[in-house]
Image (cartoon, rainbow, N blue to C red):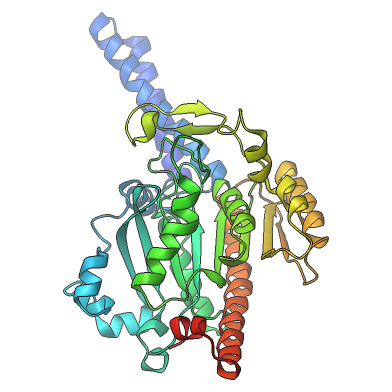
Length: 401
């Protein structure tokens, strides 16, 4: 009842505001009138913020709110590439003291790391979840497929854990054998809650697409027992992250075989970028490709898909939208029609009833998306290993253990 969306919480805010207004009306002294007016602003402001949160169904608990805004930097063990290499590639050894082998084998392991892109020169936090099978002896020589999960704006690396509750959902699917094991990769795509970069490579500015689409997957593949970026990787996101997933998935189709778009859009909006490319200062509204129509077309999925060569690679897509948001539904249906011209396989579309552009949609669609994507990725790994067993190539020696 007292959680951020609880009725009692809203009633308490209304009572506090009403009491302060009564005090303001009854008191005679100017200093107390000013004090009451200032204090009344606080519950009114909190009520407005809480109402927006309730509409979007975003933070459901205080713990999720505080953990997400803090990035969970204190509670998630941190792993660096140097420590991983020093401990011979053992994740448990690299974060010794914070990891329990028995619990990892039962629940998997969530850890944070910092990735610096060699080309983009971007340094950001990335959260990684290793499924229980990663610590199972039966999978000791298995290179796992991976899924990159992209948050919306505002948001951060911890949003998929704190807000979407992805680990609990995924563990339930694994226990029910409705999903296959994969490594989940959750990067910070904006560098701050006040920014909205849309995973775009800004000409002369931040190279966010390079960081998210190339450098983060490369780091994961180089440091963990994971498949290299290929059709054995997936990418998914909600809202802004949905646009990122669609755009990156199409442009890097040889690096991602499966794409999930939840309430995403399919043409870039105005970006809110940090001045000078540094994560400090007031965000600036910028139309990234205002002076380059060619780049705008490439980074507009509904346009770009029509220009992919007939036999060019196109990943598999999963689309989802809330039935109450007509724009999201129209966008998903239109993009689906464009995809059907290129993809012969079934194209799952999940229209969640009774919700709009809200976290309720993203949580609801997450279950069928993970079932579909992890199963498809597992088949890709199985097929790749079978092909290598029949026709060994230098690529197999690097990707099969």
